[in-house]
Length: 216
Ligand SMILES: [Zn+2]
Image 1 (tube, protein in one colour):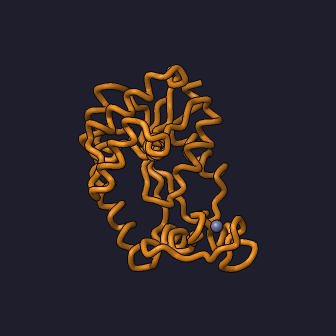
Image 2: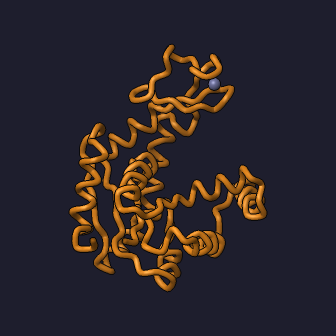
Image 3: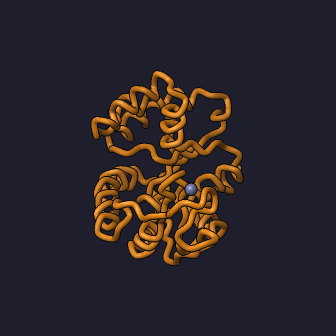
């Protein structure tokens, strides 16, 4: 089973994708994680990525495709994979179609309000960077980091105005991609209408949508 997961930030796609991957016995490949770990390990790729980000630019389609292609060559991908965070552009999607045949593109369609709430309830430790959520993952003492005892604050990006802008931006970027997969007839829209909807329920919806039993 070869799947791509699409959705705005905080749509919960990473959580669903990793759980589903376990069930299907295929790797959950998050391009964001690959990038971050390369930066952390200071590899050649990591240095390239850092340079691009430091200039406030986006990674080129070619570079992203190269990273994905390399990862999919690994043994664990022989029976399929779930991609999370890729493709981001129609050009990437078109080029990727020349490499692999995707079974379904899953679009996590979450109410704006829910995403807003998730984004704006995030607080970060000023000192160690640990992330909390004032709704779901509260620190033991309000405003204080469990790990190091320093003050927690809200990042400027997570303030309501900025959060709203980021969500709109994500949606605008996703539109051509979902259109692309819709035209191919493989787009599956998974609605998430409640903030506390269980991952198992969402995953059941995904499995129904991709008719996974027929693939067993
Ligand atoms: Zn801390």
